[in-house]
Each structure stands twice: as structure tokens, then as C-alpha cells.
Amino acid sequence: EAQVTQNPRYLITVTGKKLTVTCSQNMNHEYMSWYRQDPGLGLRQIYYSMNVEVTDKGDVPEGYKVSRKEKRNFPLILESPSPNQTSLYFCASSLNSLVGLEQFFGPGTRLTVL
Amino acid sequence: AQSVAQPEDQVNVAEGNPLTVKCTYSVSGNPYLFWYVQYPNRGLQFLLKYITGDNLVKGSYGFEAEFNKSQTSFHLKKPSALVSDSALYFCAVRDSSGAGSYQLTFGKGTKLSVIP
Image 1 (cartoon, rainbow over the protein chains, first blue to last red):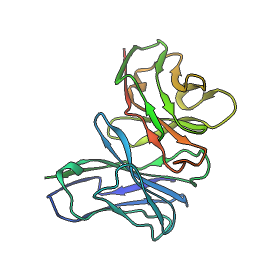
Image 2: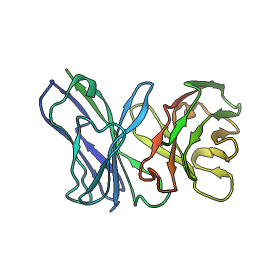
Image 3: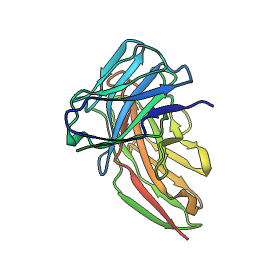
Image 4: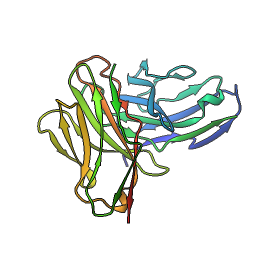
């Protein structure tokens, strides 16, 4: 089944404790992206990647890192999480970034930083 | 910079009645426009998109949307609402011109409630 998977689905952590949220897709997509969803703010893009080893900042990149060493994986790294990073995070992918293709979304990761 | 506005936080409609969820956009070039739906505790699902061509686009679950370039709008519509349509709906835009074209910008979402 074609899908985007995220792990963990739920995470409670404390301020300053490094964490990684994994994202993997099995559709051989070139383009991958991370979003955060907050009430009243909709979805905001954190980082995106157009292909392996090619990443760029979205609208709200502060406090986050990403890497794209393999085509299928695009982990989101919070090196020193803070309470304002408490949010619902979505990973998404599409075939490529050069045409108007829809994105496929993962199920989301709900992160709470205490 | 590109942007999307969904002017209604919530839309209530009776089952069987037509529904409209509004969306306006701003881009410097030509837009690629999308509608996504989010059911409770789920990720976003693609509904439909406008890239070029016919201004009326049809999508999943009986939804359609009309692209209006002069009004910079892309309203989502359905002739007869179902209770199962109750969800959070997001409009999104990409600029096809190259300016920020790798970014997909979402609106804040509209909660649709269909009342039995």
C-alpha cells in the first residue's frame, strides 16, 4: 500500500531533550515536506526537500533540522525542544516539486514539550 | 509572498443542502490551487486541484470547486451535503511562476459541520 508513515504518533518530552520524528514514504517520491498544525494557524511549512541531499527552509524553520540522506526518509530533528514546539506535525510527499501534483500526508505526530 | 484566506472558521449546513467553503488566494504568478480534507485524528487527504484549463474542477466524494481568476477565488462546493462530510477543510496554493513555487501555502482551515 502506498503510504507515508510517521513515528512516533504521540510523544511527550521535556524541554531540551533532543528528539527525532521519522518520516518514510514508499512511493519513490522526490519531494518531501514537514508541516506543523496549530489551532487557528492552519498548516505551516517547516522544511522541504526536493530530492536527496537537497533541503530548504519553509515558513517556520527555527528550532528544527532535517536531513535527506535517502529518498524514502526525511526525519525531523528537534535538538533542544521548547514548549512552543508543542504541536501536531505532518510529513508529506509528492512525486516531484516541478508540477502541480498533490501531496500525500502521513497520519501526524502529536508532540507535547513540557 | 503567496497567501491563502479562508474567511470562515466554521460553516454549518443542513444535511441535503448545498454547501460552499470559501477560499481566496494571492500569488504573483499563476496559481496551482488545492483542497484537502482532514477528518478527526487523521492526516490530510487530497480532494481536488486546479492547475489549468476548465475553471470547474471535480474531485473526490462529489466535491467540486470553481476557479475564478478575476476574484482570485477557489470556492469548494457540493450540491448535497452529507453528515459524513463534517471535517476540517484546507485550501492551499502554489505559485507556478517560480517565485516560491516549491512551497505549498495553506489557509487556516474551515470546520464544516453538517447537521442531520
